[in-house]
Image (cartoon, rainbow, N blue to C red):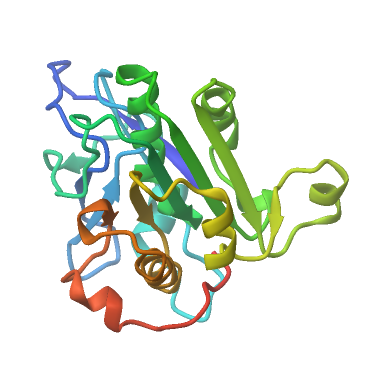
Length: 246
């Protein structure tokens, strides 16, 4: 469902630096398509490497038309192919000047910028307390879990997994912490609220719920950070209901 692509410069020169949480744009001219396609994908690894990594969800089998670009990347792009990409951009970035606890919340493929942030925190601020929360349907679509578990085994990093449709194998092997969705009640009981900074990304209903929960629990605006493609106010006007499956 989600595949990672490692992108290195064709000329072997250095890549531009980026901040955890930023994205790159990919420009594609796909055979049979009338128009050029441009898509933005969050970088899913920490800065300082000799590559950019994106982790792309294949949009297929939904009520909407299959994703042209995501399916092309999954089916048509091979090792050694050349892709046109932009420099990293975006203002949804981790603040590494602070030492306060950090809570990272993600739904579905929204975990990609969260993983970049988590890796960066472990590398450059190993003493900073981090809570990593991820919501998915089940382990069949839970991407990059092994990477997260390597990091959440550290003393200052905790993780929680929410599955709304766990499989029998998930139950048998205790692959998740909570069945269902992230709720305001659970957050109130399990997260540090006095001084933590919150970052979240995922489907709009997921983000709308998390944003509402945080405000209900008294978290100030300056400690709430999210990735949303559109004006920030749009999130508060979006669907106000519990998160859907992600």
